Length: 116
Image (tube, helix red, strand yellow):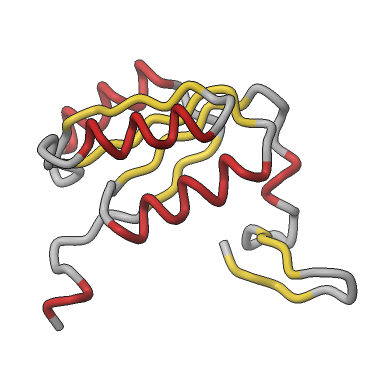
């Protein structure tokens, strides 16, 4: 996805130029990476509306509970957490089959941007 500026406002579009918000209302979103960038993206996606379920998948469960509670209290969608290493292809495949997302957002990284 890329941020594209229009005359009225900036909007997110995919590579084909289609507005990502054209996904069906009640959509399921899988967000890989629960760090700072992932949580900012989650909040932004949820603020747009039309999302019924959002699953945040991350290796670290230690900070997840408070973040998930905050998002659940701030938005109408059901936000859940899945502890998974995105490098584990078998576990990732199982998560994809279980959650069947209409939108997948990749925000996971092996190196924190703060360590560079």
